[in-house]
Image 1 (cartoon, rainbow, N blue to C red):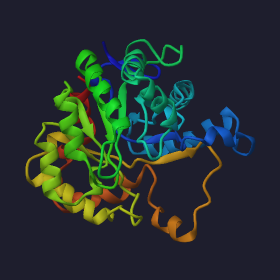
Image 2 (cartoon, one colour):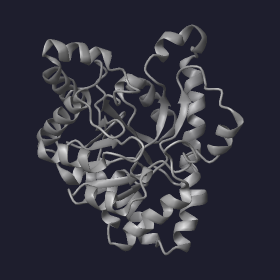
Image 3 (tube, rainbow, N blue to C red):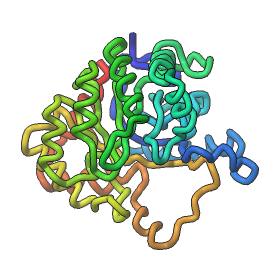
Length: 323
């Protein structure tokens, strides 16, 4: 089975330069109830997302992993339309967001009935092997997420089910860690339940500058992603310069084969676009999908990162995870 994109299968060598964690369309669970004031046409949404895709293409990006969870607006059909319009390969996800900012009521109700674990497994397995909502578009990754300082019993159900689906299908897993916590715990839980370490990417590891935290996560054989560049100077978010220092430390320790870079941008909000105060706008001025290439990689190259290592991070490491 090839790599599942929203427009069909690819071989690993067709992926090219890949951003491994960007959201073309996203909003928090509950946005659906605001459509009276937030609704826009599909054409408008596609036009907005196409502008972000153009920035990515300018920097040579061929593929984007869009790990938007099901409860935060994932729509495989609109991603397919965007891919066909822009020529960018898009890999979409199956999975749910963490309890505090996702839509937990549905499966928490079913958890109380005693059926949730099997139902979550069935959902993930079906979307990976058969398709999403009858579209025939298959999820190419599973998205998981945990809370700050804990993996709740609700979240644990998704981790256990995803590890089993990965064991059976080989589908990669991409995770969200909250505010620089639970990286090692996520890796341990997945591996102990049958997950394949080399196909697991523990995300948002740039939220923690403790090198021991990074190494304890890597000890499980998984990959780690520094995937929130530009999303800085907010509560719990280190500066990009500190992230660069930690990342280059891992490079110096020889982990270039298991590292990834991205931004975690939200390029189109599906609800009403948030009206951010001036100080937040200033903090997020570089949170756009060209930031790595325009501002971060030049600094990393000054620190000794080579073109060969950059190619590995954006091309060959992704090929390995999906092969």
